[in-house]
Amino acid sequence: MTGINFLAVLIAAVASMIVGSIWYGPLFGKRYIREMGWENHTPEERERMKKSMTKSYVIQFVASFVMFFVLDWYINTGINTGLTAGIGNAFGAWIGFIVPIKLGDVLWGGKKSLFWLSIGNTLVTLLVGGAILSFFA
Image (cartoon, rainbow, N blue to C red; front, side, top):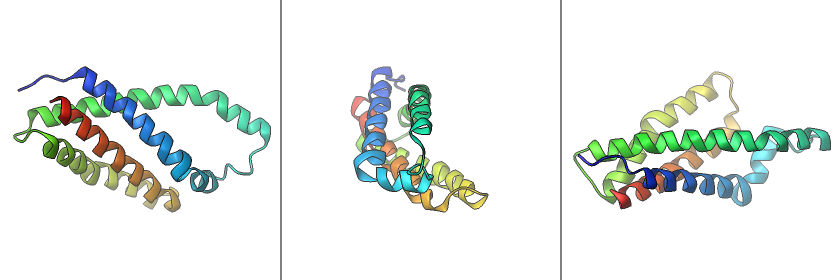
């Protein structure tokens, strides 16, 4: 068994932030803002949101680091190794854990319009991270 590669986990966590900034920026940012109801915020509300973003980014980065730490553990303790294992484990985590949890959120009061945006971003994030982790395995 190979140990956790902290450099790979760190790179995957950084990559997840890049994927998220592209996903919720140029690709689907306008739709996300509209669905969240943020387009009608006053300048004061927007400024207040901007001030809290640094803390949110830091917490999200830590959460991503933890997610990729666990994914690296799955990849390293599994029977299969390499790119197929990295992407396969990432997809399995997505379909087996993320989609059901996000679906439950939607079914019990969340915004249905954000479901596909959210799980799509998470799928791409996990696949990229799984590929990165497998590269370093």
